[in-house]
Length: 195
Image (tube, rainbow, N blue to C red):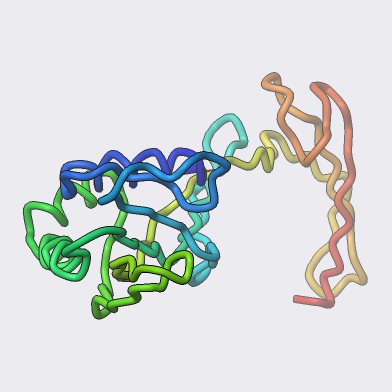
């Protein structure tokens, strides 16, 4: 899932959890009327090692990578702390978590709700609250690694010999080592002493 797809999906998942407008933070647009909710996706971090599938018959391998980020949710207007407490509680319900799971997104580690009311224009206090939610998702990418369909040896070397070569020809599908064309011959040198 790309970041654009992730953000669109997050918006769709959060929209039913709030009765007020939701906007992405840091937009060049006027603020909506109070109350409203602002969301911002933090730094996207890789988690763990990538998973590599078997190579299919066309020489394509699927690589699955896991990503994680913190989603900051702020509410502006009266009763913001209460509204975000209700939101945070909703993220502990199985019915809501199942909606995230169906989109291959995990929402976990919901922070405490923080009252961050600020002085607006030096005149009045604007009620505001904030909560962070950790998100984790996977992204799949493909890699054309190629396959060797035919191997023809050109020697009778044995283990213990200093080395031998394998000469092959890319098969009818045109897939051999990276960049090999159909019918193109290639050579692989193997150092038997290394084994």
